[in-house]
Length: 265
Image 1 (cartoon, helix red, strand yellow):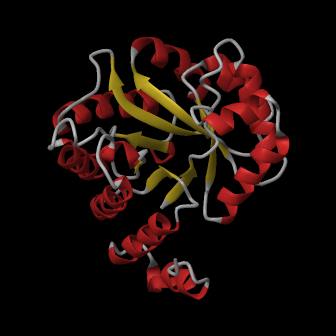
Image 2 (cartoon, one colour):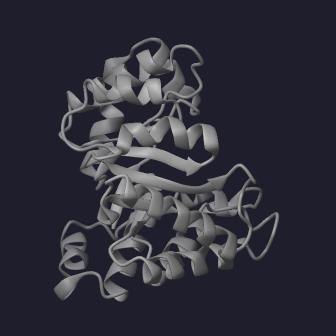
């Protein structure tokens, strides 16, 4: 399971304040905490700063990588912001994300084509957010085929089928899970990823729904998640689900987590 640490996002008030004041220590502390708790990538997002996003995203990327050797998940629909971040990034980044929305697709394809970047392919189009498994599959197939044609290896593509809240439509969870299963069966070698907390939007005790949904998604084949690595119960559920899904040979990761007391809350 690939873990993308979600906490350095300017939509969070404390992060936005730290970015605006160029508080290096605050950002680096959060980056270290996520790295030490299992993040394989550190998401960096400065999207709320219209007009300054390229400058701030570049600063975030260099600030994070000055303190951890974890690659960044560069989170923006703006090609100028992504390009600015790439000028200072070390290693192979993840780009979050390209979609079938015409403007976004045409802007981001030249950035990822022919590279070894990991690419999040978001199941969105100009028709809006897909509601059914078939709608998600239609977008995913077109995105994957187009990326492969533009020399992005299938194993570098992480399809995000788009989690939507069950509070607005009780079938949204099932449709997402069915999409995961169909995508990985249709495209051998493909990866899937999601920011799953939206599943519980508008409902009380959201962490219970998020943790349970994560386990269900792993059972269907999800192998990447944009989550809070500091959420000990979520991370424990991921380790346990990976073992139960047959993704943890000899249960070595599970046993390591036990020895490190990661199941004690």
